[in-house]
Amino acid sequence: MEERDIIILGSGPAGLTAALYAARADLKPLVLKGIDAGGQLMLTTEVENFPGFPDAVLGPELMEKMEKQAARFDAELLHQEATRVDFSSRPFGVWAGDQEWRARTAVIATGATAKMLGLESERRLLGHGVSTCATCDGFFFRGMELLVIGGGDSALEEALFLTRFATKVTIIHRRDQFRASKIMRDRAVAHEMIGIIWDSVVDEVLGDGQVAGARLRNLKTGGLTDVPAGGVFVAIGHTPNTGLFEGQVELEGGYIVVQEPTTRTSVEGVFAAGDVVDFNYRQAITAAGMGCRAAMDAERFLEAEGH
Ligand code: NAP
Image 1 (cartoon, helix red, strand yellow):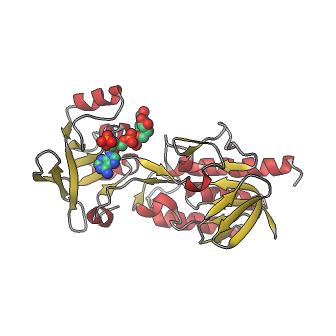
Image 2 (image 1 turned 90 degrees about the horizontal axis):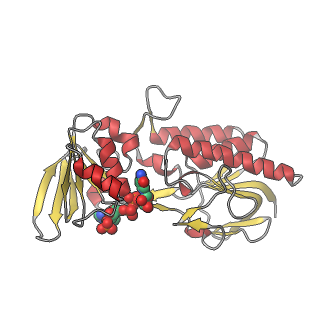
Image 3 (image 1 turned 60 degrees about the vertical axis):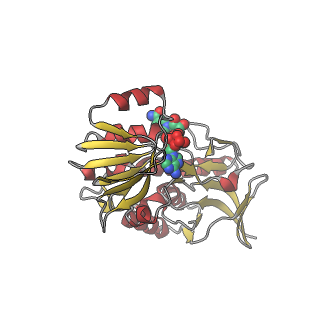
């Protein structure tokens, strides 16, 4: 079986940037794009904060451009999802069903998935007023009333950030106390533009083509209330896509541990980049930067090994 220099798992900004750099270093990378090829940007509309696009770019269009750019330099991209890996000895083994590849290095860039409420209306209006990222989308909601769902640090951070644009931000939490740290709780509660609705969940996101509000259900009384809003920010946490790597590389809280400032994981020759590592910044540009570092780390590793 042919032994590749590098195999990249994932095709969001981290995976595709790693592919671009590896391809331009003549490593002929193989990219297993995954089922949700393109990652979280495929679920967004306008991206205004990726440098180089002064008039914004659509998330899916940006990912298509990144893929084309990697392919131009002979990255091989397959629309397949890795179903098993073996990092216990080199060359590493990667499988998609019955198909098997061997590689001297691997880059894990499988990303993270924002947790969703699981409502049909939420899915339908994602990118049309439903968002999972205030930093990315807050700017589009200037002058509107907004809802933030969740009670952890993410929800409160998003709510505080959104007060820059919104006329009012209401946090909807399913219990009567926040899970978030004390400092964030204090800030959110004290903020004059932030309101809180306790003990409530969203039964339905309202709106036809664009979010108009949400139907809330009080878990203590069962009562339903319709609240008008121009945007609904779901901030109930993220799940790193690392199920495949359990027992293979070191994880912490589900995220892959790397030896900062490098992208080295606990296994020599395996590197990781993007949201699968980074639960802090979670931006396309930071993921792309890390993908670049992972490819350069892999290239230097191969060179040191005499390949
Ligand atoms: P989290 O701490 O797991 O909080 C998730 C919140 O969403 C909880 O309040 C939870 O409610 C609620 N929730 C979960 N599923 C829900 C559902 N289906 N419907 C309604 N509500 C739901 O997640 P996170 O806020 O993303 O934080 C993750 C980690 O990153 C934490 O360790 C956090 O401290 C850290 N973080 C830190 C900062 C910071 O320091 N600036 C910022 C962001 C994140 P319950 O409380 O009832 O479970």
